[in-house]
Image (tube, rainbow, N blue to C red; front, side, top):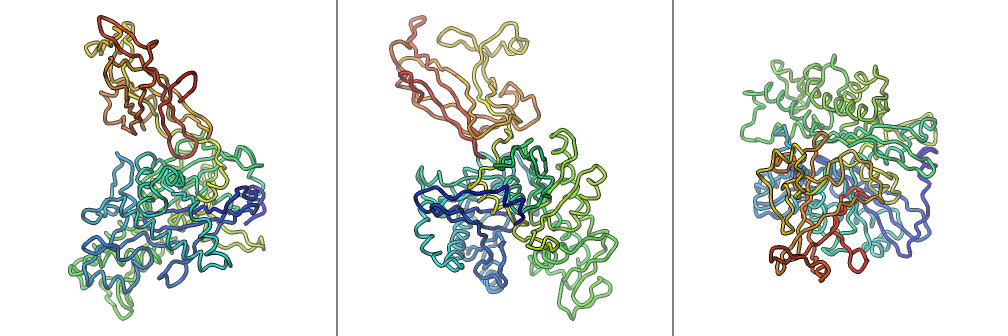
Length: 601
């Protein structure tokens, strides 16, 4: 780590009285990773990365996000074991099912996958929570196993003492809030990470992949020492298997290190799997009808793409004027007509470059959108993530953004000898590492509301308001005799509002409840993710205003004589309450509060 990073992250000793552990888990579309840090009283936590998993031929900090189930839905293998030769043979022999890309089943409502490449069905009668739970259990078990076999003399003892207070920080793509987070927390419970109690659920935290990547880059010393100062702005381009996640930050303080989010983060389904999908089309076109076209083995082309193309051809590609080679057979296979020499098929550089076009185009659009939203002044871009290692992606971004004054950088690890720099594998898959930093440091002190949030209520009729006049036919009369217009989207927080950890946003409402009727109220929270200004009528914009959650409260204790009203022989309660929203961390919190005897409940 560089001296700059050491100075910025001047972590203090853990001031707790009992030992604990923070575990950061990044479940990626194609690969996953885990980091952790033990917290011992009066000691500075040291972050470690799990760099070997069971059944890996060579230790690696990333493991395939794959599970194997038998026909009865019993888990047979996960991660590294799922791609082991023996498991693959058993899968084919026993007709087991391989499950991949299961993370995509968590995507927010209303988002659509434009490629069949990510449409991988789950096992029959199994939902995404159960599948994700199985994979989280696997990652936890592997982490514990790694701790037990690590260089820590007291690793096993430490885990036993800290496991009941373990905090799990789970990573999700930018903008995957609400239901995806709820599903991940349920999966953590199903996977045995935490108990199904209020205390257990509180030990599951969330961080966006963009924010975790930003923290990992800063900790790894990516920025030049003379540039990182108050007011420094940058864009994180996290290029993964399924998504491209873009987010922008500004350093608001260097001592201590604090950042603020500049605009809403962006997430696009345009990761490296879309490159793979285009490459598969080339493979099918070139080999259709040949001896390599194997109808009896439908996964033959998939295996070539996920192995030879993913690990060699794609990673090495950097020049459209040069030929590339893709292994499709054995070394003794030669077929000049198909361009196959010693088992490898020749690919023209220009056609391989076309496989990247969609992802490159989407990345450039998203980066430029981030910069424009931050005022348009050029900002450096830090390209991270597994797909971020691609020389071709880096080259195309650099060529396109360079003339605009935008510098594109990739992470390097600064060794003790400043002149000797080598790629840092942990920063490429540094989301889990950054997740631990997120929990330990709380570096990002303000974020931007990604959506407009509010409730749907009845608003008092105004005869001078053209919109009210237009909807006059919908007028309803309340028990109090007031006339109101229904289905009004009452905004509590507007999109792009800067929110700090301690901020809360309140809006007061009331309900008139006839005497004898239930005083349990259900208030629905809605959001709008489109351009501003947000629409004001829910019934006319049901497709763009989406339900977030329902907040339930029993207001029976407010039913006191002073609040009892009467009109036209009907008695009713006027119950006043407040809907409060908080965005302190990366997870939305909502509640109903009211006053009893002068105290807020």
